Amino acid sequence: MTIQWFPGHMTRARRQIQDKLKLIDLAVELLDARIPLSSRNPMIDDILLNKPRLIVLGKSDLADPRETEAWIERFKYEGHECIAVDASTGTRVGEIPDLARQLMQEKIDRQLAKGINPRAVRALIVGIPNVGKSTLINRLAGRNIAITGDRPGVTKGQQWIKVGKEMELLDTPGILWPKFDDPIVGYRLAMTGAIKEQILDIEDIAFYATRELINRYWDTLVERYGIEEERPEDTEQADEIVRIMEAIGRKRGCLISGGRVDLEKTSGIILREMRAGKLGRLTLESASTY
Ligand code: G4P
Image (cartoon, rainbow, N blue to C red; front, side, top):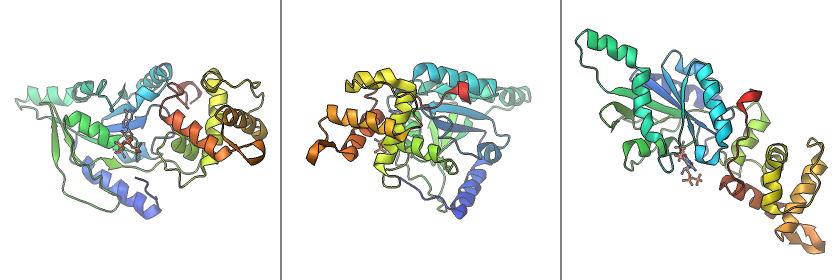
């Protein structure tokens, strides 16, 4: 699902989340472990205000494990509880209710001291489109729920999904917008499949992807495609990126008349394989440079 975000949509999305915040104890902020910065809503602190928050790094099966650990440390240092999960298989998803309860422990203890039996911790999952909200809700619920996700501006009745005895989840996640002002963010979202290709040119996305791969995962690139090119010294030089893309295209037989490389076809291959994890586990944003 690709949503075109206009100022009115953003205001409504924000209002919808703020309405839901009144119903819950805790927000689960879902980010893509491969791009924890670019998959983050730019106004998240403003929107969630003082609501206790658990940051979940999703799609961690596709991300570089060392980088993911560094991000977890980073978020903890900033005072947030954080966990990395793979919602597609369920790895570590089962730890979320416990963490949610731990975050609410003080309140629970206060209630117990007053003789009140604490109810289940109520939570809302928030995140940008395609970050994996529905997949995570289904994993936590342990069954398949038709999650319509309220498009900005459309409201519907809320239902609570029981997650064991200790947690309840709103069945519709809060959908937030990504950053728009930085074109690199757009390309990173497109590289990971969060933005559909129709919006951005496929060769442009693959160009940026190849540049990131050269900068961060050169050996992986060489190994996957068997290219024999010199590593570009300056990846700000567009020609140098195209040189590597052409080498990949030649290795994969993407040729058009006159022996030229079919860059569109090559771009499709690079992006498909990158998103499918064929180039290994990749993280495009490091906690250390943030
Ligand atoms: P959303 O509700 O936030 O919009 O996202 P959704 O759950 O629909 O997930 C978007 C895509 O991401 C889905 O792929 C889903 O399977 C995948 N996904 C979600 N969590 C994980 C994860 O932890 N690991 C991996 N590897 N994939 C995950 P899809 O159905 O194939 O959609 P698409 O690729 O056709 O867009």
